[in-house]
Length: 292
Ligand code: AMP
Ligand code: MN
Ligand code: MN
Ligand code: MN
Image (cartoon, rainbow, N blue to C red; front, side, top):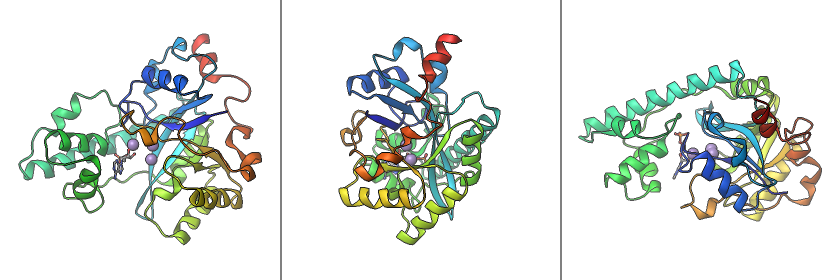
């Protein structure tokens, strides 16, 4: 079992097509892959059943940006029905917020004499435009030295060209995921710049809103931190999830399947034992596509 339940394609801010991502997932020995693009499920519209090699199982997923106490918190949903109207209405709103935010960043860039962001964005295959794309634009223009530099100086909270978006609430995201038959998972809990008490509050409010999973193991997580997240997960009665948050082959430290195994004490709470786990009874993607 090697389940990578958090990965991006070029329909959001990943660099691979869905087909290339599926090939890489099979080559890296994954048993399960969830594609979880930011605020879009467009990747699933193009996938052909014969792109899914060998024993790989593909789960439908999404990663929704939310606002909680003025922090941007990401909620992953897996096993979702992409045709669900409630979920798609929410994702359409989120995509509009993303376009509006890009336009606001373009305005401040133009005021600084940097033109062409919107033309650049129009050349991309993405459905959900993000700050990663803007960072790449700044890199191509020689304005940023690296993606990290772009986020730190230009696009992060206090960045020169930053613009905010009024994302939906955690409750709305969880509700939409559940209405679409999915399992809601709090993504990369240690990547938020919040204190430990705030993190505990976040996890318990997420669980109270109907969230069911916590990412316990993901890229660049040391053993102590993983242990802490395992405790947080079990203390809140959540299911433990694993995922790389893969974006690009260039970021080899975040490659598909590259994360620690769940600790033994999470064995009974691994997310693939959840009664609603889509791979439990069948390979949902194959069934739906071959039956379509
Ligand atoms: P957005 O969803 O448009 O707000 O952008 C968030 C995305 O930007 C994350 O999913 C990451 O892919 C990327 N990101 C955020 N912070 C950084 C950073 N410091 N360096 C590189 N990429 C980042
Ligand atoms: Mn991203
Ligand atoms: Mn995220
Ligand atoms: Mn992600």
